[in-house]
Image (tube, rainbow, N blue to C red; front, side, top):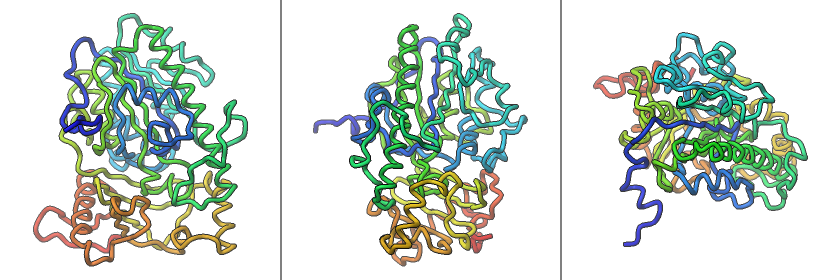
Length: 440
C-alpha cells in the first residue's frame, strides 16, 4: 500500500527525538482567524504564500481548537496551560492575575530571553514579565539586535489582523469578492462577499509580516533550530463564528515548523491551545508544571476530546462545549437568551445584511435559526454527516447514548477544572451521580 503524507503521519511521531541545544521559539498568532482561511487549508483564493510554505515545511494541524472563542480568555490559556475559568480570566479583557504562573517563568529560569511584539492582551502587569516588549512601531529586527549572545529565546508576535474594523486598501492586490468562498452558515450577498474579501485582505497583510520574520531568522542563521508556531486566537469575526462554540468560532489554524526536528506532515489529531505551553516547555527540557492542564503534543497520547467555553464578551452568554473527532455537545447555560453578536460583529456589513435578508424573507431555515428568540439548552452534532452544525440531534432517540457520554465528559471536565457553572451531572464518573437541569 502506498502511504500518503497524512497516513504516514499516523504511524510516526510528530517530532524527532530532541537533540542538540535547546530550541528557540517564535510564536505567531493572528487575531480572529478561522482554520479554513489559509491557502494551505484549501482556501484557493487566499494570498498566504509565506504561511503556506511554512505548512509545506512543517506540520499542519487540521483539528486545533481554542479554549474560548474570545481573545483574552483563550490567550490566557496559551500562557498558563489552563482553562480560562481556572485562572479567573474567563471574561474578556480580564488581566491574568499576578499570582498565576505562566510558561514564561520556567523558560526564563532555563536561561531563555523572552520578548513580545504587539498584542499580548493579558494586562499591563503581565507585560512586565517579558525581557523585551517592542513598541507598536518597533522593527522586528530590534528584538534580535537586543538578543544576548548565546541565549535561546522565545519571541511572541501578536498580530492585530484580521480583527475588525476593515477598510479598503489593505494590500496592493485586494481579493475579488466574486471569487470568495462564502461559508455555508452565512447568506451569500454582495455585502457579505465584500466584507469577507476585506477579511481575506487583512490575513494576506499578516502573512507578509510573517514572511518578514521568517526572513530574519534565515538571514541571522537561526532558521534550523527555531521552532516557529503559527495559530489564531479564535474564529473569524462573523456571525456564528467568533464568540460561539461552533467550529467556525473554535477551530483555528496551527502550524509547527522546525527544520532540524520536524518532517513535513499533516495530521487530524485533536489539539487544544492548553497543549501549546506544555509542548514548548517539554521541547526546552522543562518538566510540565503541576497546575497545567494541557498535554504534550509531542509525547502524550492523542486527545479524544477538546473543551471550549464562552462567558462575558460584550454580553453575558455562558456556553460550554466538548468536541470529539466526530461529535460535539454544546451546553447553552442561558438558553433564554437569543444569539447576540459581539459589538464589532453587530456593526459589521455582514450582520446588517443578514438582518436585511431576514426582513425580506430571503433567508433559509438554517440561517433563520440564528435569529430565534431562544436557543436549545443542548446542541448535539454529528460532524461527519453535518460539518456545518445545522441539525441538532440532542432530542433524537438514536443519539441518546452519545449525548449521555458527552454530557459525562463535559461534566467531568467542569468538575476537574473548577468551573463556576454547575455541570450537567454531579459525580459524573461515580455511582449515584444526578442529572441537573443544566441552566442558570
